[in-house]
Image (cartoon, rainbow, N blue to C red):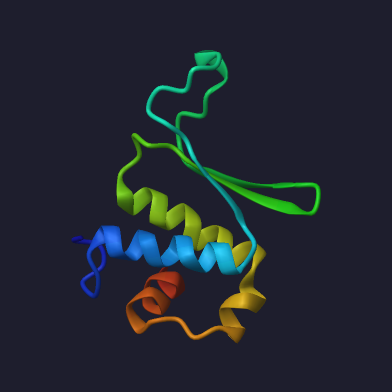
Length: 101
């Protein structure tokens, strides 16, 4: 992945999904053909707070880099304490640090 010299995109996304699971983020990966009402289907990956839960919705048409960025930003914004208390591989940690505002 051109934006992260330390890891390829799929491995980075996989590591972030594992970290999100440990941080108790609720991640939903939409299918390419959501059988519901298409007018209400998200068109881009995003994160939000629903009550005291954090949801991250990943749109399948988004590039892997964008999905990784959304996950990293959600982790940094909503679960920074987990990031500080966890061992995270250096390439993943570097990506997380770059994605923080």
